[in-house]
Amino acid sequence: MKEDGIICITIDDHELPRLIMIMEEVYGENNHLGTICIRNNPSGRSTMKGISINHEYAIFFSKSPISKVGRLPRNEKQINRYPEKDKKGYYEEVNFRKGGGIRKESPKMFYPLFISNNSWRIPKMNWNNDKKEWILNEKVKRDENVIYPVDDLGREKRWKWALERVKNESDELFVRKVKGENHIFHKNRMSHNTVLPNTWWDKKEYSATDHGTRLLKEMFGELKTFDYPKAVEAVKDCLRVLSGNKDAVFLDFFAGSGTTGHAVLELNKEDNGNRSFILGTNNENNIAEDACFPRIKKAIQGYKNQKNINIKGLGGSLEYFKTKFIPYGHSDQNKILLAKKASDILCLKEEIYDEYISKIDYKIYKKENKYIFIVYDQLSIEKIKKLITQYNAKIKIYVFSLGGDLFEEEFEEFNNVEIFPMPEPILATYKRLFL
Image (cartoon, rainbow, N blue to C red; front, side):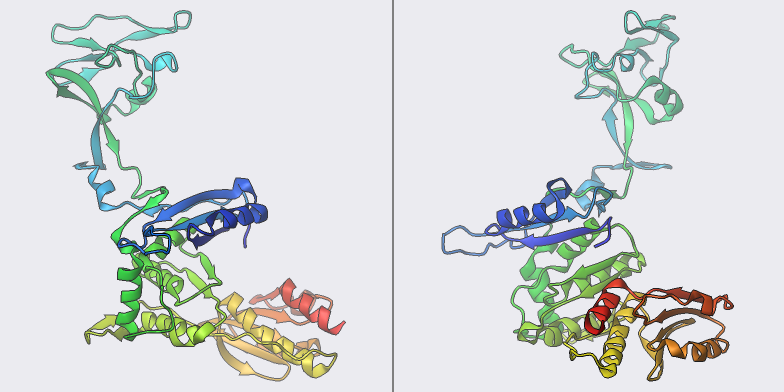
């Protein structure tokens, strides 16, 4: 996981305490970002102990303190909190007197304002540092009154803004009559279209039955390989918390029916993002081939649901890899086999999958006007250099070398070529097997 990465695990009540202990041991207690309770089963799941379970937990841990939690879109209730609108956007009318603050805490924010029925203004005043108060230098006019941030019980509060901000943003304040008295109000604006995630999620779209199981039945009919798929919307919001980056890469190593992949595709469709996903599964009960892969494929390409209605595809691309052991032994054949199998990992890293040329000593993969050259035998470098002259495109080159050499000097004459070291895990495996 990257230094700014975040991990999310969903779990029930039974295992939650033990899981948090393990995660704190691995990532550190201070990197526990929060635990969210998700109402994923509104009707309840019966238990032997007689208590119906309506929820699960999503726990979030960061790799390091530099990790940053993503934000969630405002729901309808949160948006409706801001019913007024002007040329700057939506806002709510709020009393300018701060509810929780008191004069003693911020004496400079206890200043006078002059107010009439329809207007207000800042009077001339000076700050007295000895008395810690503002001294008025003018009197009110005939139709004006002086107002301080004092509540209905006579308690001395404070205004929400410092005097300098009031001067700079005076158009954000206005007079509002409450219970026959004039008060100063301000426009509390919706500063973001998003909010920080809270610890209780209860949208109806989080229901695993209504928006998880039912969706798979719409896509496949009666699907027996997976009984408890998660709701796509619940996973989408978890992904939003994990990263606000539209180019983020998400890894789900318990892929199940592929809800994470489906959620990533929907997010990309919604905001024109370029997120990608890596799903891993042990293929128990053939779930990878019967559910996960075909589900993602249908989501990308579109499908006809059980009501014979065409559902438009979300777009995207999909590659399917299987892992297996390779023979162990100090032979050239095994070296070549490992190198060629590792090529798939490099393709995954670069997101370039189309095999363009395949030879014993090298392979070339292509995506639009980008190429990756994977060289299995460093003795073939001269041959590769001659090939490069035929390409007017960006080329990335990986050369298998037990010494981890980059061979940069061999390609310094080419402006369109970048040389990359073999990823350390691949190189380490290569050395372990053959040195």
